[in-house]
Image (cartoon, rainbow, N blue to C red; front, side, top):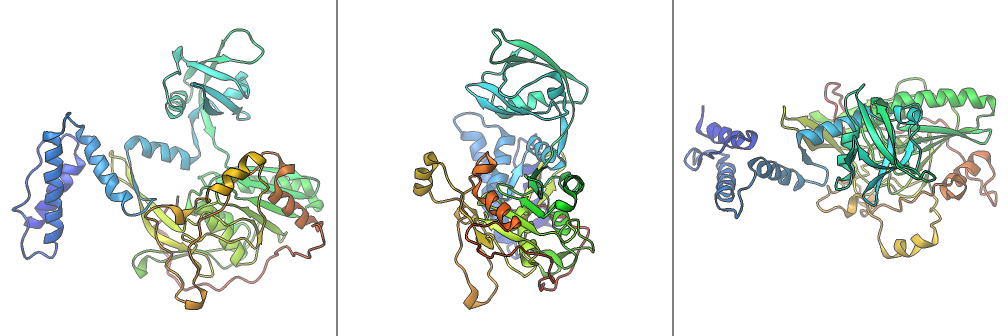
Length: 467
């Protein structure tokens, strides 16, 4: 083993094994002529500081916590989306992206130290056991919830399939708390919710891009086509407040509305890492008009979909500027020590646009009507977006001096619960039906020739994951 290799091995052993209690001094192991000699001097510095903290801090520190914090500090210094995940956080992330877990099937929030049920999910153990919206859960298996965080309480409610749990519930209209026994089952998070808007419009809300998203979208579209039949005028795809998720799911969703052409390009540090995803022949919307709703909460994978359909002129994008997260993160497992989330590429829309720190500008800007209590806050606070995050990646630009654009900071992410008060949704409905006030003459995008794409190579084996 070369001396320089030994120095690096010593550092990695120190950082990777929580049980190591002695840090070797590597100050004499690097070669003065090594091109990496400065790097190993810096590793010496890390080792010196680590050992000094362990020996002199006012209280005995936790070695694992120190190492994990150091690793996380290194990653978060790169950009806002690179980070270290402990083994538990990694498992939680896998649950979110997988879209299914062992649990009860209730959406909950924390209120005054107890768990409040937002709503039970249809056809789940909680719904079948009689859990209702606005129920207050005070105990889990006779243990008080008071003192737990929402995350801790949720973790206790999740567990292996076919295992029981008893909830102690307070319900309005009942004088005394009562128990509900529930047996856990596989809960699938449906990222796609759909409904008819009147007798002629298919509305589809995509809340995230997990492993179930594309399959659920196909089911929703098939059902809506069956229900609406020949009355179907078109689709409204709602991506507002969708924070993103899996890249392959964003590609599959885009492909459902495209006949051919590029969907997204991902460009890494080296040219050989550039990839391009292509649409396959056939599209599920069968040529019907498509409108896409976005706002300041639409980020990452949702921006990939909006950008692809916009560039191909397959959809009219309505709403306000999106978040502007144009980078791709790859999840790299570290054995039993969790994983790192590392920014490995930027993504570009089919016309070679980078939306990093700029966002997707809608074809038609429609501001959401805010309630009075939010207007003053909105006037005082600038909307947050990628450009407002400290240390964000800069937009690389397209090299055309006359087309340069300043970074933008997102837009409002407010969406009212009542559809009739949803300004953006109502505009889209009127546009599809040709009933816009004042006969504006706005046209709905229909299938067109694919946009020009920059050349790129593909690599099917590498599957980066955006946030």
